[in-house]
Each structure stands twice: as C-alpha cells, then as structure tokens.
Image 1 (tube, rainbow, N blue to C red):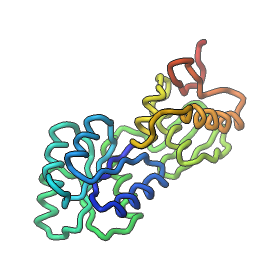
Image 2: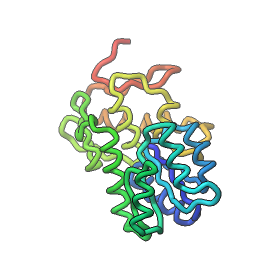
Image 3: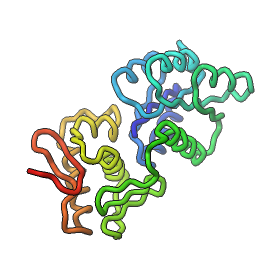
Image 4: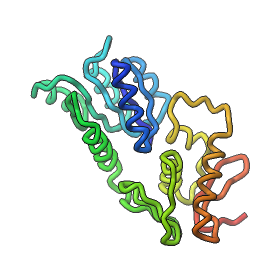
Length: 225
C-alpha cells in the first residue's frame, strides 16, 4: 500500500512517514497542496493524509480537487478541533478526521479502517495454494508453518497475493511498495523477491513465486513454462 502524507511541518511529516513505513506502508511526504496534486497525478496512492493548514492553497482546496480526480480515501490531520472545521472537512470530501496531537496507534487504526472500507471485497485472509496471509495480524503461513518476513517482504507478498495469477511487473511493485525517493537504479526489487522466494520455499517443496524473464513475477500454484 502506498500513502501520500501532505503535511507542512517537516518533523511531523517525517515522524508520520517513518511510523507508517514501520507498519508496512510505502509513504511519500510533501508540504503543499500544489505539490500533492502533482504527485497524485503521477502515482497511484491508496490513501492520502492531509493537513488542513497548508501554505498557499489549503487542505480544503486539495480535498475538493482530489475528489474530482479519483476516489482515493482521505484522512484529515489537523490542529483545528472545532465542530465547524470537522464538518467542513468532511463535506469537502474527507473520509475521516483526526485532531492533533494524536496517539500514533490511533492513526494506524484509522488508516487501516479506511483502507478496508475502500476495498470492501478484499478478504481478511489471503490464500494461494498452501500459502496463507492474514494482513491485519502481519502473519504468513506456508503448509501450516509460520514464515517470518521483513516489513518490505510482507508488503511485496501482500501485493502479489492480491494479484495472484496475474503478471506483476517490477514497476508495479515499485509503485506500491517503495516511496518516491527510490530511483530504480539497482536490482533492489529482484533482491527482495529472491529472499522472499527462498523463505516461502523452505516450508514446501513446490514453487509458488515464478519469475517471468524480462517481464516480472507471477504468484500461483503452478505455471506452464
């Protein structure tokens, strides 16, 4: 999952980004509505976190423009606690509202809730053959044996499992599992996928994660050469 954080206070934006990355999300942070609109036109974000008090065009303007562009869920983060501000934010198109200062576990819970609501058909448990993932519990099992993954490996596997049987390109993984700062100048995707494949194959003799030379990867029980 890739999130966009629109917050003009650098220290807070960095803290939010690092905290969400520790929970498996790829994040981009930006400090203005204008820059946020430019980034959102280039990248497929799963959720946007917006501070209302932005320099230049404010968060309300950003919300209205985002709503005209795409149905991405939006969580407002702001120091404005008055009822009128909350109502205005929700009427402008926000899906939820969190007042500063906030407890980080509550932020994570609200992010997860919005992502679940935006994908109501997504199952709570993902299965491909004898591979089982429970995203909410950060748990993976292969042939009933627990598989320990890093945060990045978990994010890659979740994306592959949600697109089981489909070709997933390296660019798709970069878009959804890495942030804007990654420049694509190394074989980092292949390194992570290789480590993930080795961990998955330890618990079973069959191969689930297949490489399509020059194209990308397919996660499925079997594949015709």
